[in-house]
Length: 235
Length: 257
Image (cartoon, rainbow over all chains, first blue to last red; front, side, top):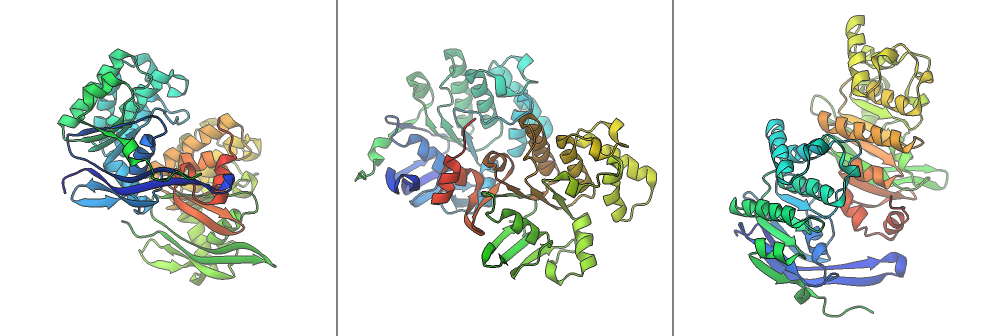
């Protein structure tokens, strides 16, 4: 098997115990895969379960059934049933996840936030620091902000810090959930270039991009998730 | 995967008819941070006391991998052996600093005491290490001779951390270390705990009712209710996609800041 990521007949629903146990089906019968060098973009209206698929691949959401296989070197891990410690190891070595939102760590400077993400991804302190500076500069984040914690930054600035965090290490599988939602055209172009560099280096991407320009710039394939709509919607 | 540092099996404790801790089992590996969350009375502090052998369980065992590599049932150690372990290889940061510190002894003395427990007698070395640790927990060197009774709540907690970490423990228990502190003081303390535990590769069991603290610090989480662990797993998965009705209630009851 050469795919970096494979969904096999994955199903997901939410059971809301505080709402009399109502079951909200999200997706069913999801089968798709991402090969090295491929950027698979999830399409479909909001609410179709695109973000949920990324969160399941990251181990952040549980699945009702099926398997989500992630390649870690010579071994294959099923994220659906893996031990938490194995999922954490995958996140350190294999899977990068970039959401729209930066979860801020109090008091830590922007540069250190990005360096820490590189260190967690296995880079040396020196390499992480050099790459962090390079990425923040390419993403046009003014150097005067690097020493400040990102808590007070604008949405677009926080998003660029988040992208730098996600892309700094050499993780082979990138899960990108609207990473360019609040960026201007110039910075979107930078992100598209960064993603293409990762693809050229053999990484695989599963992403959500509502912006059609961004999608056209990076997508190698589009998967419409409405085809994974659960058959019978519960009342 | 590394071998467990701590192995808890079937820990059970009753207070009369009430089950304070019911059949709790888990493993903790080196460097792993486990958060135990739940409301007051859920049994999380009882569980911590059982692990620290401050309480005797009605049944169940706590085993620890000693420095020689052998996993030993703590109930089988002598009282002196257990005390020595707690003073050197374990730390315990308590919610109430007056129970974790000697309030009338200087800050430097509080840190140095644990070193003396290890047999260190050289005054200069003890003072140098105390100074080093006060610096690492961001306490001004000029306060080394002041007793913690003159410190603020946040400083007392940081001093507790220095006192516990000076002996290079491998396992640290924390009972609500940040509750009762101002939010800004909490953030500073959390950042310090997060940084030191990662730098030193500490295994940590942290009891907290604050889910944000659990999310920031822990790898894994165990949700307790009425003495039982009702849900356990990867911290972000349990908090973002809780399975159990009670966990859903806990998570949905938090005000988003």
